Length: 300
Image 1 (spheres, rainbow, N blue to C red):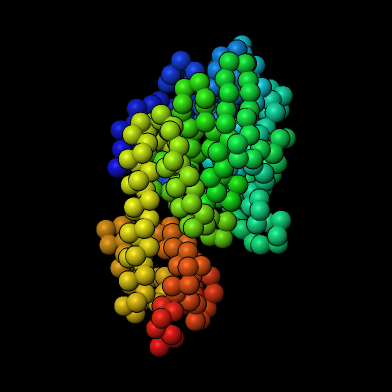
Image 2 (cartoon, rainbow, N blue to C red):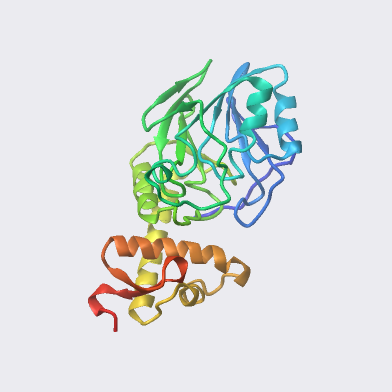
């Protein structure tokens, strides 16, 4: 299902298709693969998707490549620190207009709910966009596709001229996506995957990793993976494993221990999903330290 066949060079502008170029930031990690891929769309008057992290080399490469062109649009899929912070510098240098669903935690923070730290709290789009909105440029057109789950403000961009969907972190060809509460929501994430299942996108361009051409196979695989993981978690809870720190090594048997904290966030999101479906309940503690039991077995 996943592919890690990914050819690129840092600090270099790659031509991917007649309309799409990419610059990969030098911020590799277990969560970003080799780094953030910033996309340039069009020629002359161009759009940039996910300007990336605040890394001088990355921003300088991007601006130098576009020194004889005009950046008109900055499109942001979501507000994690590897996607949106460079907007400020690029906007200041180019005067481009920023587009995004909203600030980090949109739809949660406004209701007084707490969302995780470590996000780009400074990003506020010049233009707030919604599902189905059309963004026009010179020679290119985007349809906005709202995909909450990884974050509550995650949105994808469909390049109509090439039938390609720029998927941010919602769908990645190299790995499954982290869904970390409280802003990440596994139930919403699955709903968003199902939404893509019924589209006819010819390909996906994730912000991390290679292009995906067999889109239906990947979506079906991701949905199946999450449903199987949900059943694993539920079965383990039914067998008496009540706490996340005990669930992780039981479920992620081959995962390096260094990745267990990230896996714990995913398990926590799955437990919240099961609680929303009234299949488990919390009987003690709170947050990631809570204790869970199956509802049909009470608290014993």
